[in-house]
Structures are given as structure tokens and as C-alpha cells.
Length: 354
Ligand SMILES: Cc1cc2nc3c(=O)[nH]c(=O)nc-3n(C[C@H](O)[C@H](O)[C@H](O)COP(=O)(O)OP(=O)(O)OC[C@H]3O[C@@H](n4cnc5c(N)ncnc54)[C@H](O)[C@@H]3O)c2cc1C
Image 1 (cartoon, rainbow, N blue to C red):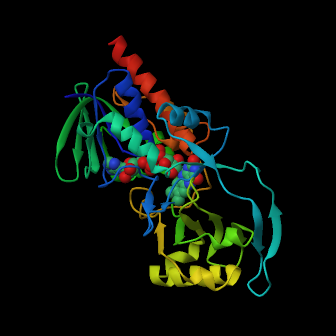
Image 2 (cartoon, rainbow, N blue to C red):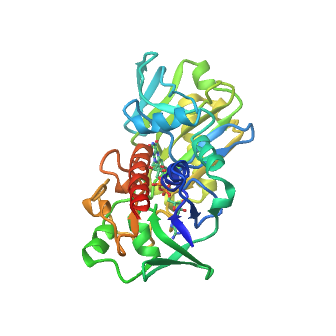
Image 3 (cartoon, rainbow, N blue to C red):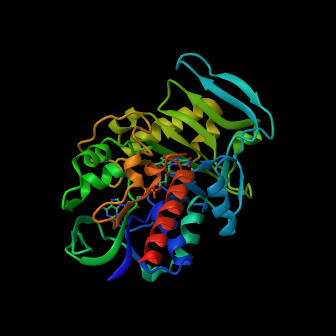
């Protein structure tokens, strides 16, 4: 029997585990997928350029994230924005140009890629405490013990349970016995999962021809498939890519078609050099681990940080964390860390009192 089981090995689950480890509390993490990180996913291109399919930027006001980065010895750097940027309103008119000066301090990125933070947490938590390919779909509370069942029928027992999933995903994928109180079910069902359904792409190049020609790489388009594009060179400025978001119509195309459209769009801004691509990748964030199939539209951040996530359930043994449960910076990496620091403190207090 574990003291604590954490469901979900995204930033919230892993940073909660890291705090528990520091407090000397034993735990196990159950993760549905075969990889760690959840909405943090850095992929590497042909030239080993780190490219973000998920979380990328943070701001100076994200103090808890900055503190964790410093504790984990991970550096960060400013997003490159200097140069000519483009704003395209219509496909039949050339984009408007505007100049962004140096040091505009727009946003920051993590050196080596956002996954560096997941990897550093993993090293500290220990491989032996994480079970992959364990999709939890049943939680039963009996006699002050929580029984957790995964989709392959494995059963785990724990005194305390922390759900570190988007609440909407949790209520769709897990059967609770006894049922969660009706009001809570509804709030969970109606808690928007930040960035669910979004589509991110990256194109890797051998050189940053846009910067060589005075462009920043920042483009905002109201007419192309790629709606936002940014320079994604690495910190050392030795590996190069452009990266951004595709609009919702991307769902209707195959990946080959999306690639063709994105490259054609880049060629229109930067000329023939944009055609010589090292690698192209994109990701539609619509798997069941972020967005239930029968999804209903909810406004961004709807019910995020709702007071129900501050309570404990199942005889006071079940707790929630996850960025959507944070009442500040919910949806962002900062919210994930705030929520995790808080839940780890609550569990530590409860275990120490008992
Ligand atoms: C495209 C995109 C861009 C983003 N950009 C930014 C950004 O620039 N800046 C920023 O701050 N934030 C950004 N975010 C948000 C950021 O990624 C999240 O705030 C953060 O990663 C959330 O971490 P989490 O652990 O709370 O949730 P998640 O990362 O969603 O982790 C939940 C984990 O639970 C697992 N899981 C799900 N169901 C089960 C189950 N039944 N059993 C076991 N495990 C399960 C999932 O596989 C996942 O690993 C972005 C997100 C996306 C998708």
C-alpha cells in the first residue's frame, strides 16, 4: 500500500511528486501514456533542433515556475522577436510589415526545450516511482483505503490519491465508487481544458534565412492555415526552426496536406529558401488524454480554479491538482506548479497530523 498515488505524469503530477519526495513521503505515479510530460512535448528534428509541440513560453510574472527552474538548474532565454514582423489580413494583399526592436522582453523559453523540466523532475523522482501505460479508469474508496484500477486490470492500493489530470478528462475516463457528489461532477464536466483542440506545427531548417534577411520570424495571419508563426531557434542559435499554430480547419487535412499548405505559406513570405525543409511536424491536441470525444464547447478557462478543487473527497483522502485547478495562472505551466505546491503541502500536513 502506497502513502500516495498520483494519477498523471504531466508537469502537475511530476512536480507534486518532486515536492512529496522532498518531504520524505512515498508515492507512485500512474501515467496512461507511454511518455511523460502530458501537454509538454519537445520533439527533435533531423538536425536535433528542439521543437515544442506543447507548452513553450512563460513570463517574468510566473514566479513559481522560475523558482522551480532555478532549483532544477535549468536556464531560460528570451523569445527572439527582433526584426521585421508580418501581419496578414487578406490572402490577396501583401502582409503589413512592422519592426520590433531588440530587448522587447515579450516572453521566455526554456533552454534545451520545455521537456528539460520534465526530464529534471523525472531524474529526481526516480524511474522506480513511475508506472507508464497505466490508464486509470476506476477508483473505489472502501474502509479508508483507495483502490485504483487501470485499463489492463492492474490494481493499486493507496491511503491518499491525487488526481493530476484536467478535471474534464478525469470525469470522463474514471468511474468513481462511491460517485463524486453531483455538483462536483458537473463542475468537472464543465471545466475547460486549456489548449485542448489546438494544433501546433514546426518546420526545421538548416539556416535561419528569415533572420539573415532582417525578419523576426513573427507572423500573424488571418488568411493562411498557419495563424501564428515564431522564430524557434535554440538558445545557442545553432539550430533553427519556425513554429506556431494552425487554425481549426487543419483538422480537415491530412498531415501531408497541412505540410504542403504551411510550406507554401512560408514561401510566400520568405521566398524559395522556405522550400528546403529539414523536417516538418505537427500535432493536433485532441487525444482522449486532453479532450473527451463527446466534447462540448466551453469558453477559455471556464470554471478553472473553481473552489471545489480546494476540497478533499472520499473521506478526505482524494485531492485534486493540475493546472485547471489553480485559481491563478490556470491553464499555464505556472498554474500547474502553483496547484502542485499547494496539494503537496496539504498531503504532507495530513500525513504528519495522522
Ligand atoms: C499546444 C499547447 C501549447 C501550450 N503552450 C503553453 C505555453 O506556451 N505556456 C504555458 O505556460 N502553458 C502552455 N500550455 C499549457 C501547459 O502545457 C499546461 O499548463 C501544463 O503542461 C499542464 O500540466 P498538467 O500536468 O496540469 O496537465 P497535463 O499535461 O495534461 O497532464 C495530465 C497527464 O495525465 C495523463 N492522463 C490522462 N488521463 C489519464 C488517466 N485516466 N490515467 C492516467 N493518466 C492519465 C495524461 O496522459 C498526461 O500525461 C500549452 C498546452 C498546449 C497543449
